[in-house]
Length: 224
Image (cartoon, rainbow, N blue to C red; front, side, top):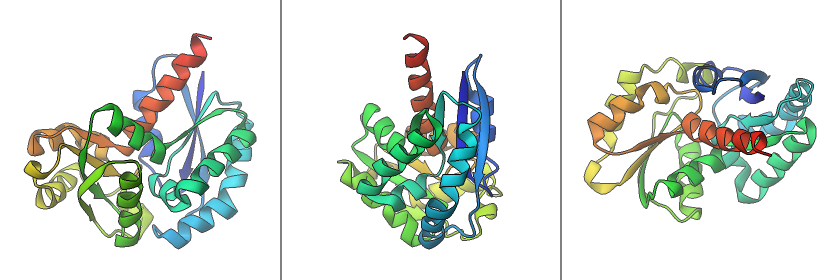
């Protein structure tokens, strides 16, 4: 079985997370999409100009499941645009497709989350889109705090301990029942255990949610 990953070109974390945690018998193959900056405008340009080529190229590896590995771009596409985006990728790759943004909402609902504290790597505009998306899915957002990183490569350079420190500065554990750390290029999966210990709350990350959805789809294919 093969997982394909569509990832912004500057992202150096997502494919590593998927490779480390893919089940036995699953290989991971990546196509990259050029991204100038971590802003809504640049991500819209990535979706229009870069995604079609990357999806076409990835389809030649004949993946079984494809992960669209950019949480904020899914949120930028919006509730109407995101399903169309996923349908376009499905046609280009002939595979089942996981949207990280949609997977996060599903994972939080499955975990019984009701009031979520959100930590992101993003500038305020993108952080707000994540907040609105979660609220449109019926979740309350206690706080949404972004690190304000514009250079997309700098996101991967945030050390796990710095992520924990930022979360502790912005999240009141008494005000939420779950934490969501948004960005597939943050080392949030590495930091997850320390985040849960520091905050005393369950923590969901972008890559963990996408992995769980990809695994569920893969298991469904195996049992057909």
